[in-house]
Amino acid sequence: MLYINNNGRVMPRESLSIAAGSRAFLYGDGVFESIRIFGGKPIHLNTHFQRLFKGAEMLRMSVPEHLNASFLEEKINDLISLSQIKSGGRCRISLDRAEGGTYKPEKNDAVFFIEVMPLEENEFLLNYKGLEIDIYKEIKLTKSFLSPFKTKNGLVKVMAAVHATEQGLDDFILSNDKGNIIETSNSNIFVVSNGVLYTPGLEEGCIAGTMRMMVINIALQNNIRVYECPILPHNLLSADEILLTNAISGIRWVGGYRTKRYLNTTARRLVMLLNAHWNKELGLG
Image (cartoon, rainbow, N blue to C red; front, side):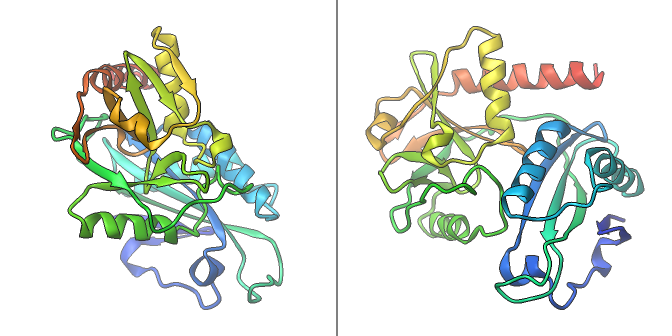
């Protein structure tokens, strides 16, 4: 049986009901993090918590002093143990504004919500078949102070994912109002040319992905050059590889963009390096 923690109330996952007045439900008024679990242990917590608390600060939430990184780590580990997740899994943790008010909140206190679920894979696995992608043209993203964070206002990305499915694609690339590529519906994006990684900088308006930064650091540690720079649609056509990264899937390779086909040499190497890092970090052998 899987369990959740709704602001201190631990209960079976299937028993949860949304409280009347929930601002997360009514207005998407919150921030969240998706965290991968290996060997029953959540990874990259410090980076996730830094972004979570910074996002709450940008939303002008008041986070109680006790609701700190140590407290949340303890609650996550309690749920993992209670749910008997001993190998792979995922965790989603949210900080939401407390209920009350309409568009104007009655108060700015933060409440938390944590859920965990198992995954079959106890390591990052590269997708066997390359993803098929295209550019989503219906809506452009505009950079704001909220762009680096995972807020619960995700309708643009939902629509991009829905439209991709309707087109028989795996994902859509999102652009900013300048026409520059910034990310996909659920991942940061890297373009590989001649063994060099290129990824949109945060000034372009992309999510400050935890896996994005992890890939950048691992690449640099292994003498793979990385540049954060604007990426235009025509750069996709001259690339050797396109990689998509997020905290749960790790690294996925793109097989095709329109008529262009891609390799996965760099993707395979980075997945191997990523798994080696976490196996060593967690003592998984």
